[in-house]
Image (cartoon, rainbow, N blue to C red; front, side, top):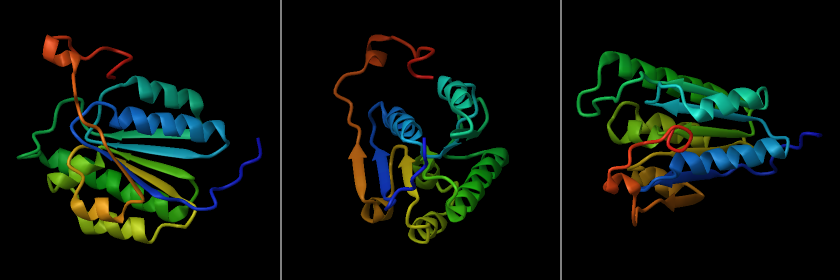
Length: 178
């Protein structure tokens, strides 16, 4: 398939307390790869082996997924130095990748959480988005998207839970939640 870059890249934000933010961005990634676009997904605060990482490996070189986190939950109120360093590393790679313009779609998964808890500076993310090449689409996921990011975005979707099987005691399931 002949690759045609996007004529215009936009900024999308998927936020809210409901399930589906990462899943939504993965659906968009699959669609982009299917249309011959190159996708990079960087996961903030995630370090365990997931189904999406295994699927992205199958889609290489059209899709690349890199996770920056430990396989344990981050204490967001008091993050370990390693967690801060991994968030910084993810942001630095995001800035480099967006600036280079080699990926048509860049997904920054859970970056909103890293921003909400001050693990990375909002000003750097806003500057990256404002100065990106015009054809690069950027998706930012995670709860608690900052108001400044919502204002800058072209599309904002809030996932809102109405009912969840966690409430009935059903735990996270392989291939569905991870």
